Length: 133
Image (cartoon, rainbow, N blue to C red):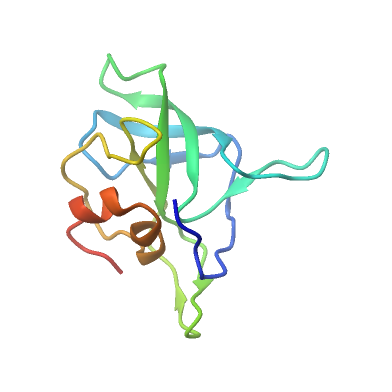
């Protein structure tokens, strides 16, 4: 996992519900924990584009439901700034379910665009993505 150069605003808090954009069998995830996020006492951790999370499957296929899966946030509604000065925001929030913590995605098709920051940090996701913005 590489460092991200953009100043990404962390807009998805702990226990937020995020839809998936792949064909892994999960439809909606609830953020259970954010890896590598440190906060002060009493503050909820938050995540943004490119962050690695552990999430529980709320809606999806019967064998996927009520399981905890690793995932990566690939889109967020809240705009963030790139080093060249452009600001990027998407129409929705989205995540991709992973097989393991190495970064290989469980699904084979991604619906919609993937953020460039997530594609740079997770090269396995970039290989499957059809559109990278």
